[in-house]
Image (cartoon, rainbow, N blue to C red; front, side):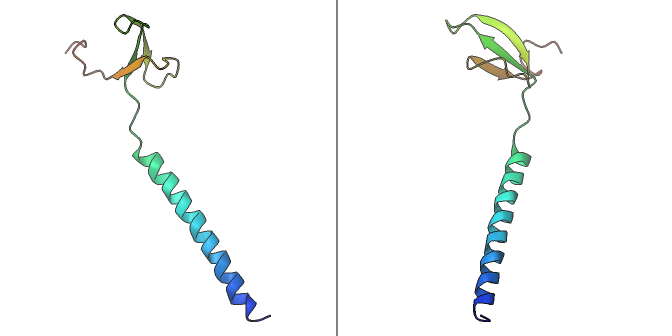
Length: 77
């Protein structure tokens, strides 16, 4: 019985370490994410004609959107 205690304790410590490592990885990933762009430009299906401009955090742009910041050539100085 006494011989099993250190083995079980070691297993629990290893599980806790794995859990803490996963939490640290999640935290690092959230800290290292790039900030959203200022704006996204949704392009028509033909690939050339712009349809709408969305705020950077808006998810309605879809797959035909490209990001640009306020420092783009279209912005006024």
